[in-house]
Length: 484
Picture 1 (cartoon, rainbow, N blue to C red):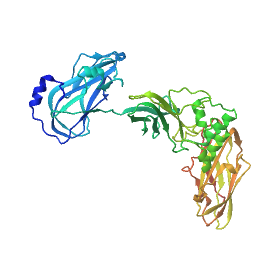
Picture 2: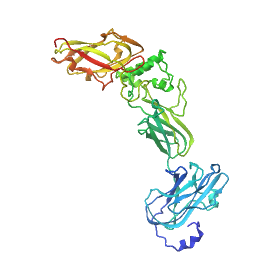
Picture 3: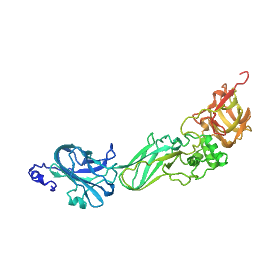
């Protein structure tokens, strides 16, 4: 046994020391107290299980830079550790030696942590500048090297490092300043440390790490690309490209750059509309669901070249406040993942002549719109019964500037037809304007068309928008034939 405590040396020699098959080492760590920012915890971690062990002596030394100032003392201790002052210094660091000499009967589980002492720092928050040390010139000269005694045997293990944390918040930008966390964004570390965490419902994340150095923090979320997206967003892009309505918010410009080309063009509007129509090709050009900007970074106009990660240099200890704004790609107008805003004025209503089907007969279904004085965009999905109807043709008509590119038939076998249109400049529709025609072949008879064809908002919400991009809805009305 090292002669740490001369007055107990003789007693230690006379004491009965039980034979042990393997030495139980006691590792030690210094961590921040989870309750008080100006306190530190000294934790013990035995390497083997101890039953009715005699924990009888211990020494450890904590140092901090002289420039930090303040003093360190024992706030409380389960084993009567006390400051064995006075504090020493080597000119660069202040050293604080703590020790106890008293027999404690301990029952410890291997690998479990036990708080040996809580230390209190007098000059504010206890930062990561405090560290356990042994084998330095000062500790060698001042009996301050790490020492533990269990069952009369030296039991000092190692200083182990508790994982530090890199933590922060990911907030949807459009909700600022009130805050709306983005859930299930994966935030990852790379560089000197690795690890990841998925943000919770408040957008918070915390990633443990144990190796300091240069570390990059980067969030990613690429699910539900079309969540919150409507053809109004495409119209907003078209209005911006044609200088009808400028986009002066750099975050909205980032949202408008659907294909991540560092510019906003009509292609971005086309990708949105085609994606709403169900085009797999358009979805592949819709590069990501979310983009992220460090909150501490000041965006300019245009914002291209902005960082999408935080680079931390030469760090150790806990790193809080690593916060990001999230930008929902394509969502320029409406609120992300919320129901449609209440309608403004009368909906865009399509009238269709109802009729009774005759098996093997063709029918022409013409969609005529009621009068609309201000129309910039609309979207809806039709659902027909493929067991009763076969689609033969889609024909854009003269009442509105539609083309075949405004129709999506990517899921036609399930009876799904999507219609999406937007324009930079609003148009007017005359009353009973013929917008398009669907030609079907009836596979069975004696059924009215109105029972086989309907709007399907589970596929694509039925919205129409004016030049101010206010939503006023879409409806489908079947007109009964006189005499039926």
